[in-house]
Structure formats: structure tokens, C-alpha cells
Image (cartoon, rainbow, N blue to C red; front, side, top):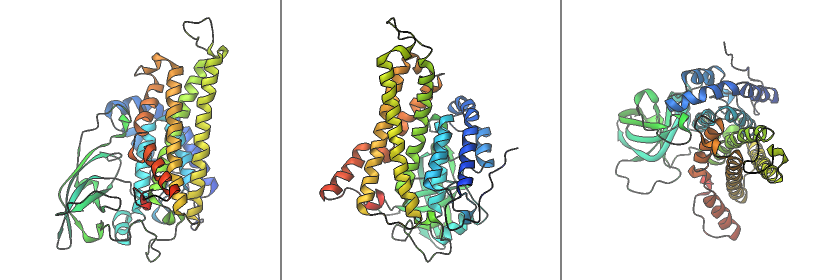
Length: 408
């Protein structure tokens, strides 16, 4: 029977201890073969298998970023990324679900006390969410009536609660960062089977639908409230994660898993290089080809560079959790560095598929699944390099911004 790793509860004022973090990394590494075995069935189901769901729960892998006061592991951003990279080597779709649930559960821990009481009153709960397109909220006595249809709900079948973006009825403006968020039990919604895609098939990112769902006043966070801001007056406050900026943490931890996935691709291509010939030439095996070795080395260097950038960024986030400032210039650079990682990951992935050859595009080849998952995930809106570079360029030149700094 699986047993969740014991946490170092004594370290309430800091992130989880190194021993705790290392144990989760080792656990993630030990689960690689299991996730690889389950991945084909998950793709057919277009959602994590029941066996995977059970392991994620039993091993505490859905509450790694949640602060210890709420029953989470309280991992630092750096240590969570280390875990994510190992999980992705087994199945990137599983790491995606883990990242969404961990990230949204942690963001819920930044919400007002009334939300934390409602969601975590009976212990740690997995939370997923979506905000665009937003639903509608209508004010009634004692609370709100929620209606909405939210696609791309990764982890919806593994979560008990949802954090959903809504606009107030009668509102006709743009959807902007800072949209109202309501918190709904997943049991109050229905899930529509809509996830038919070429990459990240196993994430179960279907559509959640709320029809006239009532929520109490305390489960709504309006955009003019202090949600997501540092509010030291809350009862539920005091962990390092309470000081972390939401968007950079979610973006950076999401990119980490893509590094793990492309590392798995590199392992496959490297293993084949000593066994396969260079077709249409006299060269055998590929390790005797200067061209192949040059391309393999370049892909490996791209991955190494992405990791260097990643841990530079997460190191800064760790220090913010311990009280260090996060300046506007640093926020803009952080966003551009994320863009640079995406270009490196994408470049390495494409190069490795050229090296693997056309046979790698067979659907039963694991490298094909990694490539499809990476190809889709690098296109997530938070990962679009052009936007990150423009934000940094405008900040560098002192030009007008295109996004609120909180969305960097």
C-alpha cells in the first residue's frame, strides 16, 4: 500500500526541509515506469487512469505546493520543479495535471479566510480551475448564483473544488487579469467530454458546466478585493508561499515539466545512437557520425541551458518566499526568461525528432507522445515567447506596458 511521505511540520516558518523535498523527488523518480506503463491507456481515456489517480492521492502529490498549515507539503518552487521534471519523464500529461491542481490549490491558499475555511476546512483538497471564457455571477440574498461553461479544465476529474473566473451579470467589458473568482464544489457542476486533441491527451482537460449553482458570499472573490495580494491581516497567513507571486510561480513550474519531458526524449535518442545506422550512408552506428553527434550535443546543451535558467528563476522565487523584494524590472526579466526556456525546449524537441527519424512518429512510440505533449504545452498562452519578449523590451525601453505587472 502506498504511503504519503512524512512532512517536516517543525519547519513552519520556511519551506519544506531538504530531506522532505528529496524524498518526494525520489518518489517521483520511482514512479516513472508506472506512469509510462499507464500512459497509453490514459491517452485512450483522454484522462488519467484510476490507478494513476489513486497514486497521486495516496502519495500526496496533489498537495505539494499547499502550505503546511493546510495539510500540504509546503515545497519551495525549486523543489516542486524538481519533482515535476521527474514525473514528466514518466508521463507529461500526469505532470500537467499535477501542476494545475498543485498551482490552483496553492492560489486558493492566497484567497481570503472565508474561501480557505470553505475549501480547506476539512483538510487539504485538490482544486482545479479556469477563467476564460468567464462564467456569469448574479447577486442574490446571502450569496451568488453562478452559471458558466469553462473549457480546458485540466484535473477536473481529480479535483474536489474548482476556482472559476466569472464576470458580474450586466458587465460588458474585456476579460482582464484580476477577474472575479468563485469557488465551487466540483460535485455542483457537470463535466462535458470535449477533450479531443493531439497533445496532452491524457490530461482530461474537459469542459465544466455550472447551471444556477448557489454559492455563499464567502466563496466569491471580487476583482476589487485583495485576493492574490499580500494581506498579513488574514488568519490564514504566515507560510513562505503566502508571499509568492502567482503568475511567475505557475508559469515557471509549468515549464519545468516540459524540461523533464524533453530530457526523456534525449535519453531515447541517445540510447538509439549506439545501435542504429545513418540510413542512406555507410555510417554505422550513429555515434560514428559527426553530424549526428553535433546535433545531439546541441540538443543536450539547449536542455542544460533551459535548466540553468529555470533554477535561476525558481531560486529568486524561493528568496521572495523568504522576504526578498521582486522589482518590476525583475518581473519583466522573469517573463522573458520563461520565453527563452520555451524556445530552447521547443528547439531541442524538434531537433531530437529529426535525429530519431520518421519512425519516431509512430503513435506507439513513447518519444512521439513526449513530442506531442511538449508541442502542445509550449503553445500555452503563458508560454508564448513573443509576448514575454515584448513585455521585457517595453520595460527595458521605458515604453508603455501591454499587461498589468501582476500578470508578468
